[in-house]
Image (cartoon, rainbow, N blue to C red; front, side, top):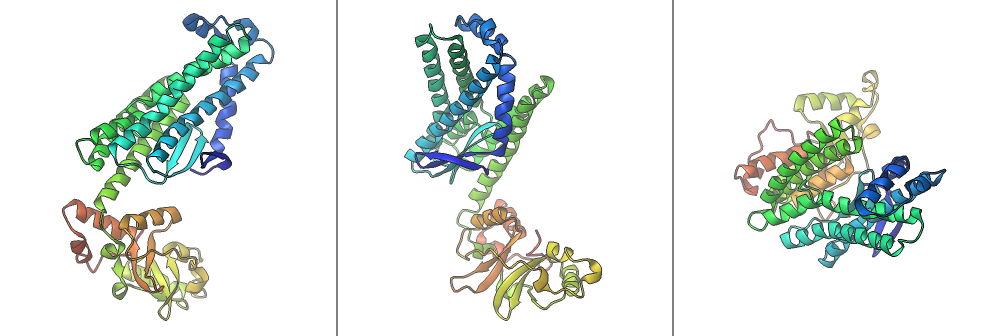
Length: 393
């Protein structure tokens, strides 16, 4: 998740996503508009003795609303540092912590597969939130004779941080409770299988949250439900792919150089389109002799108007900033490189800079399907049909 870097702590960059700049004033407005009601509820439940009339007078509600909203996100930030510092203690790299629409997100370079590590990393965040809530309530007790404004803000933050901890412990993978569930499941079963089961539970909770949000007109809850559902599906898929491609290299999956269809720089775009139709390929390496000089795809060719395709050559439309992959790299890293760079295929380049093959999403998905049915890397490389397109997608 992208964001503006605003600082760092413990070597971890802290970022603000643009959605945070929208939700902070929204929360401040919502809290400020209900200061009197919130004060009365806290008085009844915790006996804080706040003068509801005083905190609801003049501009005070909006100042308190902003203070409480900022305090809430400080609590969220501390929650994420709870996860991150425990993860760093176990040797995992934290790329950043980002505050955004739905709270905070700690970005791991690699998710833990040891169930003990994941358990303590996941539970650390809610424990920090409870500690922050207790500390805020301590401020209320110590400053019981202080201003109503102080009691309101810290009393409200005490309540919200405890609620945040409880809510995060719902077994809605990939929320904290869902990760705790996966960790417990992974004690007695493979990590990928535990992920699939935790993700299934997470999807059920996402559906329930969406229904509750729909009938109570809580847009943020609906958005959260959507996020949980998509994130659970995505991580389950990623974990399944990682397990399937364990020990499989790019060489095992790629289309080798001798089987590649290539084009030259001086090929016309019209001829390129004809070849794509005849050969059912949508992407080609572009060679100058034996040297790779670019990649050209159907989208590149489509950028030229049909009446002008005879006048344009491949070197007018091809991409020259080509991202390659090493033949000894693991297959999953090739898929991740495609996703990061928004491409559907990668040239495979050896240590000498020579083109030795091409790997595409189709190659990877075909390999995945074969592995899932009990195939091996040797079977994968030997089962490409003549009519299969190594360059689609």
